[in-house]
Length: 143
Image 1 (cartoon, rainbow, N blue to C red):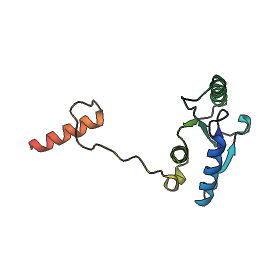
Image 2 (cartoon, rainbow, N blue to C red; image 1 turned 90 degrees about the vertical axis):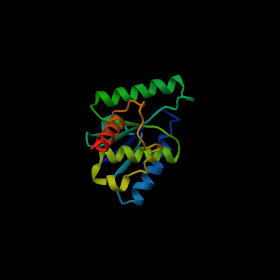
Image 3 (cartoon, helix red, strand yellow; image 1 turned 180 degrees about the vertical axis):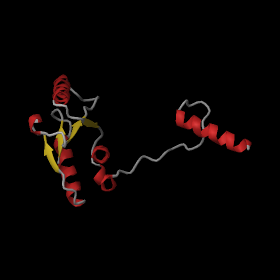
Image 4 (cartoon, rainbow, N blue to C red; image 1 turned 135 degrees about the vertical axis):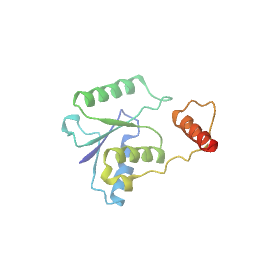
């Protein structure tokens, strides 16, 4: 199984390939990291990560190449995930993507999730889970 790192020029794909390869080797995870492989060489078992465009500095050429890569992956029937962020954040996001697609290594690839800032009930947020927790707490207090 190989991890294909794809992206338009100047999206950080080569940097991500290098740090991801180093991380996987340090964890003894036998995944091959391929920087910009040809799409026809990928198999359905491979994992495709597409480096997202940085909105503030993306050019029209990058956008066109990004769309071509997406279309090529879709035409080949490959599922892929888009990875955003810079530096260590991009690596952490890539590890999260790998963990969802390669559950056998999920424990080793687990990223440190962002801590939840608010854990109390909120009466106006409209989040279904939050509303469920609020309702459950209200019902349990009435008993």
